[in-house]
Amino acid sequence: MKKLLFVALAAVAMVFASCSKDNSEAVVNQVKAAIEQQDATVLQDALNGVSTKVQELVAENPEQAKELFTAVQQLLKENADKIKAFVGDNAAVQLGIASFTEASADEAIDLIQKVSEQKKQVEEAADAVKEAAENAKETIENAPEAVKEAGKQAVEDAKAKANEKVNEEIQKGKDKANEKIDKGVSDVKKQLGL
Image (tube, rainbow, N blue to C red; front, side, top):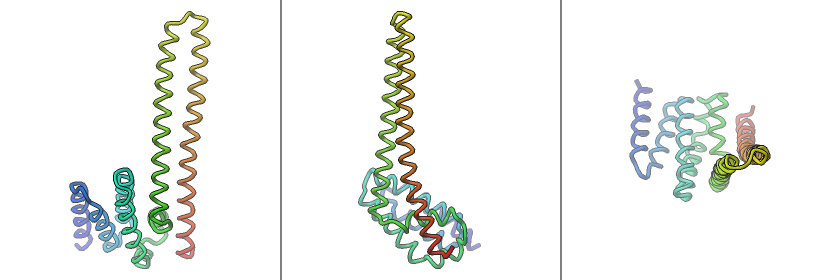
């Protein structure tokens, strides 16, 4: 019965969060409810919700994103022993916790901003490649046959180079994120004595 109450409270908090303009407090309350419920899966879901909200706020209001990150970070640190008791060796939840406890709010927000900027650059590069390919296609369709073949090869080469650059940027972003994640997991394991 008690678990159902906490699940219901979490659901109400999520509804409130989606309806409220400033729903940072509701998102923090989800994490509090998950800790009180002592359910690793619910905590993981709540932390995913916080991550999503922080990412949204970084674009809209970085200062509010820092405040939310700091509030959740403090909550997780204050309840570390309690959380450790019910999370156990659940690596996914430990990783979620580490993503909030192992870096400062400034570092986390800076990383999110960099990843967002890289994503934007990749999207812009992909759009430019698509536009260039469409323009080249139009030019090729209007060119004599010999020129068409040379144009087709140039388009394929340009696509390959652009895709390579896009993939490099994506990999750079992934590598940076994975480094932070690996560090966080390593630190969590150290804290947990694993």
